[in-house]
Every structure is written in C-alpha cells, then in structure tokens.
Length: 188
Image (tube, rainbow, N blue to C red):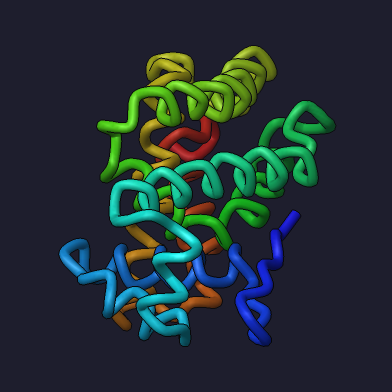
C-alpha cells in the first residue's frame, strides 16, 4: 500500500517517488540526491523530508522491492497449477518490479533487508523444485541455480529495456522464452 505524505500544501506519493528513484538509480547508480529529486518531480528538500539521506533511500527502496515482490508472488500464486504455467504467471507479475530487484541485487550490503529477500527466493526455488518433480524442468540443474538464472534474466531484460535495447513490452516474453529454453525439460 502506497503511503501518501502531505508536505505543506503538496501531496507526495512516497512509493511513486521511490519508483522514480529506482528507475534513475538502476540507470545511474551514482546519481545525486538532487538528480533523484528531479527524476521524482519534487524538490531536494521534499526528498530529504521523505528520506534522510542516500542510505535511507536505498533501505526504503530495498523494503519497497520486498513488499512489491511478495505482493506480486501472492497474485501469481506459484503453488497453483502446472509449474510451467505458474512460472509464466510469476514472470508477468514480477516484471513491473524488475528495476527494484536490480537495485536490491546491487545493494546486497543491506544484510537485514537482503535476508528478507530469501523468502522470495524460497518461493521461486520451490516452484522450480515442483517443476522438477513434475518432469517439466531439468533435474541436472539445481533449483537454486534456476532461481538465480531467473533473477538474472529478468533483471537483464529490464535493464536492456531501460537502455532502449529491448522494447519494454517484451521484458516478460524474453525472460520467459529464454528461461524456459534453458531450464525446460522438453526444450533441450
């Protein structure tokens, strides 16, 4: 749930500011707080009222990433139905938060937040394990490796879209097709 903050007579959607910050920081990790504020369409002073410095901004982005990732997995219902179809639903739901995941991956130094990401990893790893038991995913690759490959492909596709090398609408499809070609049992 997005938190709305009223600063004087201006209403600022905290999550919208964080998403704008994530988009910028994925493209330019060294962006200044002034550049982040500009990307979010607010003043630097307003940004500093929302977050107390760069470290706090990164922590907030990591927490938003986890919240949005968990919400996406709840919608995708990875434990429901055929593992292959469940994986496709997971990809569709996680595409909108791929920039946040890229940022979280880059900021692994936030141990307490990154540890919480293990919950997301576990859900996705269990999906791959179920697919292995169902015979739709390769058994010669570990489910943990498939999870890493999934994150890498999703993040890479999102980054390619950010840089104009891939159409944004194709991020999910490219991730799905590439991943399934590599981990699908019938695709070898």
